[in-house]
Length: 211
Image (cartoon, rainbow, N blue to C red; front, side):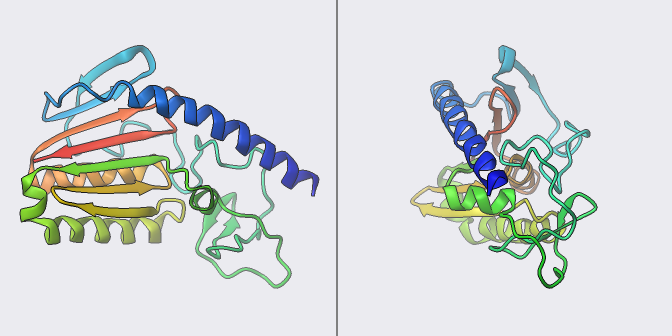
């Protein structure tokens, strides 16, 4: 009970901090897309153009399975065998994996399910333009196929919601890596203009793709 209380308190502090970060990031999104592929780190306001196929090479030190820099990850190390009661993922060798839990295993929500439960995404993907309507089926097929592949390989990378609108598709994800991967995949397949903005602590990302 004490561990759950500590984790809850830390999630609430994280929620408030990330809300402030998100508001600050929103205020900086009014600049129009200029570069075909642009990554922006709000930290220091540094900007540089990127190749579209380097999405998984910019942060080699991050653990994609556990979300090493995800503030929703428990600070105390959970014991191997711990099972998420929502999705069934299991901690093994310090990572959340798709395994069968032992009977009587400890239960703790994984970071992805915590974000889903709190409705607080780490990744925001906004697809806009007339081309989105023209090629909606193909675009959504790329998104769904990539989401399924990433979820199977990395349990903490999941799509939370897909909202379709006229001339737009809005996607939220449980981590920053999947959001970026979706933007890169669409840019490789359909060109267009891609902009990627990270929050101050790299725990929130906004991906905008337009064509």
